[in-house]
Image (tube, rainbow over the protein chains, first blue to last red):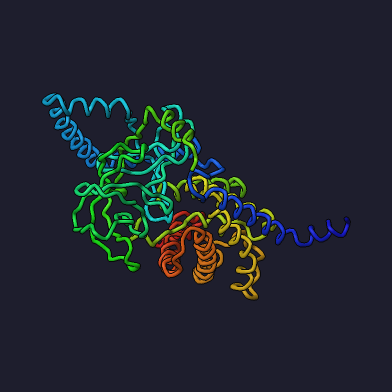
Length: 273
Length: 174
């Protein structure tokens, strides 16, 4: 026992170093997994508050762009409103969409672009009704999925994340495929699992499919930039330009699916095959 | 000013500057400068080993909390703190530190400090990108990032140290 204490005293520098490094690696493996399996909550209010203060200062320099974006969105909404009030058929459609999905506006307080796994922090949290796994969109297109929530802030796993996969549909053909982020460039993603009979061309639009209840149907995800020939010959791939410009993200909407609990319980009660 | 108070102020100022300003530098996505390393670099020379390691771990953990990368920066800075005594003794050779409290540029000279910064930042960047490698599998890309990030980090570190150097040479010759 005495020898052990002597040994620790003599080598305390190396021992403490090893203890701290092991601690770091344990924390790293616990937090860097798929967002549903994160076991340590890394979103907290103090961090959010400091980022918010920093963003408040930075916002003054971006007011012009923010105003333009909001004005464009207003114009878009006015056009849609005109459609709603004009024709009765689409009115029903819009009312339905409105009762299923609620949109909670939020502001981006911090975001990363060039890491292997990118997150966006927004200034709304549990107190505002934000929950894990809710979809997040911007005025341009889809942004990501809520990964972690604290009382007043939430961190969103953006499309720019190695685990992010979104079920999308080709607007023209209706073919389903999966959208992922593979490159290190924040502007482009990859759409996979496209049957070979489908001819792809530049500019084909990808929208969210109805299969996921995280996002409403028909939201723009991106456009095909360049069809890629598959090496194995089975299924094609294509390079996709994201509709959202992640570098200038400012105002986003969190989507609350009002019937999500019901859908979840229905899904869980299905007989397992 | 009390040295402990000075170091606490340095800790807070560097972490805030790192997460609010420097993290937003986007030069092609490959350059990730880290200025918070100044905190570990300027800790007193005669600091105890365990204090040095805990200080390194602490500043890394603070950065991790902001970046949502729990353990990544803490691991890299702890390793850098662990290497610090060795680095200092290698680059100093027979040089003695009798009246020198902290390894700063105005006491040890530009050449010494540049070598010191180069070793420390390279060690940190290397470990950091290795730890990031848990989720990043492109080795070539990681090396390119180290190659581009280290010079930018050192440039910013020197700039900040010269700007906030506590004892400027008094020059009234004008």
